[in-house]
View 1 (cartoon, helix red, strand yellow):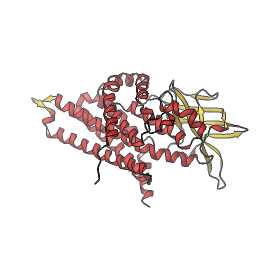
View 2: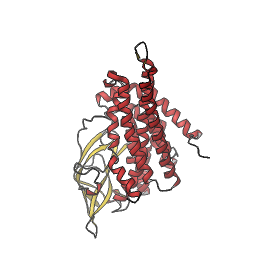
View 3: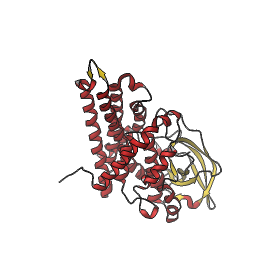
View 4: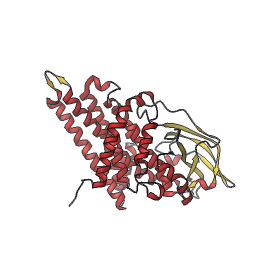
Length: 383
């Protein structure tokens, strides 16, 4: 028998994060969004709840859960505020997970307890000002000089890279040239505060306004050779694995935003009256909300499937791409329709749907554009 019902442990997690999102995140979301301020007090409470350690073993301070648990938490947070949700997603899938997947015992012991507790955050420096989807075109270089790497280059749009609690950024860089002439790419841990490592001022963004995002510059930055993360020359394969997993998490986040649009639209349809009755009595509004719910439901099934395949140890690349593609695109659609349901009030920034509208578009771009997802799916199908 096939069942999509959550087990008792995952259901309890969903309920606790849902209540936290409503009681703690929602009341301060607008203020942080408008002020472009990082919600440190919320992040501290998330750390105490164990959310940053959800998919990691207890030996590293984690909760001993799985990646699906992270996805459930992300969906519930994004139903209220995507800035907080993406902070958690990037902290785990892009910050801590590379260390857990590819780090040495020493690197894991040094960094993971701080990351899983939420005491510290980490970023993943992949995208560059001139190279986004073409990650193989990385221009940042790292040369081995004795027992140190010397790094020069820059990165763009890096999440969690400039907060007061950011500990390090994992940087992808050219560390040589392969025999066939293609660049050898590796990943290296660069602690914040290292001389020559500069974090530029935060971006002025359309959405995710309470999330931390910066451009990074590396000018003869020297770090120990032991800061190499994983095998030299395996950086490309490593970050592809990290991005495959991350797409499931982004799909969960997008599903949460899409469901949040349903939640807000139902509430408003009961509250708002026109022509002597609640607007929810009108079929035009009913059909919009019904379609929004159908989209969110199918997006949830898609990321559940991808997560199940990942946890089972079977190939999940195509399913992760499908989930990310579908969920991100229906999030944009639901945000547009929720704004329409709210009418003029949906255009006011203090309403949650206005934030949803501003936050949704980046979901079709970050961690692999919709075009990249279609390319992955087509290639996996053999075309």
